[in-house]
Amino acid sequence: MPRLSGLAMDLGPLRESRDFRLLYAGFLGALIGTLMTGVAVAVQVYDLTGSSLHIGLVSLARALPMVVGVLVGGVLADRMDRRALMIATRLPLTLVAGALAANALAPEPQLWLIYTATATTGLLAGLGGPAMLAAIPALAGTGRLAAAGALLSGSTQLAALIGPAVGGALIAGPGLAACYAVDAAGFLVFTAALFFVRPLPVPAGGGASGKGMRQAFGSLAAGFRFVRRHRLVLGLLLIDAAAMVFTMPQALYPALADERFGGGAAVVGLLYAAPACGALVGAATSGWTARAGGHALIGAVLLWGAALTGFGASSWLPLALVLLALAGFGDLISETLRSALLQHGTPDELRGRVSGLWMAQATVSPALGNAAVGFLAELTSAGTAVTIGGLVCVGATVAVAVAFPSLRRAGLGSDPADGDVHEDTRTVGGGREEAPAPEPNSGAGASS
Image 1 (cartoon, rainbow, N blue to C red):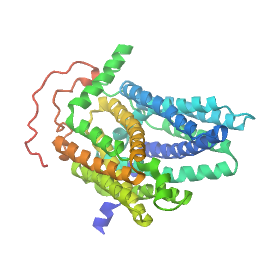
Image 2: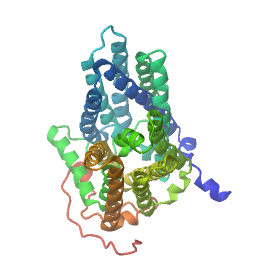
Image 3: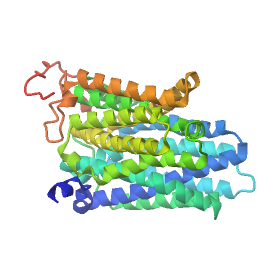
Image 4: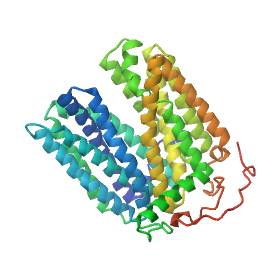
């Protein structure tokens, strides 16, 4: 029993921190509403245009402003109260969802308004996203980073199962406007919850004194320099890219369901649901991640790539679903550990900018991955494309693990300074130039 209890999800952040409970509840409710709106937008755009291309363009209209938003939001998160920034970016989303609801009720809904609202949503979500990630250590406690990450990742998977299903039911019943109205209510509740979270003032050394555009760009450049010179953080971003750029099979599910598994929409739904089910199992058994580190992260990414390699070669649906569930399990564990190690290894005055860079990469990489696997499928076949992507992911992960010893020996209980920092970044938060420092002896005490 003690061993089994050690596997269970650690609910400590929810039990011990009122502020984290408020943030978590608001985030989960708003995320369910956002995913409902995603379904509603896709249905409405297709009804208005009859074009799948427009659905893809609407997704692009959200992604591009979000990339800009997370980069700017990362700078802002290190220069102002993070709670205030979350409130300032979440409250307007209530109005945007309300505008979509009003448009859906209009006699002639306007496509341009959907594009505009989607782009605005991406920008605002991006501006506030780094502040939320950077606030986790203060709200949950640095000793609970893995537990907090598992809770947030698990809630994302739960919302991915609940949101589209509820959205589809509302569209079939009350209609599109009901989906948008629920989304507006979710953001309103999230904003109200944030008002009861304690203020999160500018971290020491966050560089809040400079207000000019040049100072802001210098502050963002300081974040890039930190990532480039901190081997652990750079390794975390690269292994994240290895997991996403080469293995994003979702775009091929319809083709695989038709060509390999002899099914229609029902099989497609099973393929989409299987990774989420595996991820929920991973979240429910994530208690051990608080004692894990770089080796477990590398193993989880390898599991993701290997499982997708097998999925691409499988022609038996039950086996394919099991492999997708294993991939989802590995993805949840790797996401939990990546987030925890990234927050643990980054000084508080830089967490906003580094979180922004991570979110930008996490926004761009899946888009590149879907494009790459689609192009490869055109040259070969859907199954072959997934298999090749999985093998490339495994190879890239091994290469990153070999090239970054600090990633292999990383742990949540270790000193964050043990990240093979090639130059002194203690003054980087204020945008000042770093003084060269000798490279630490990476061989001392390293376990690889």
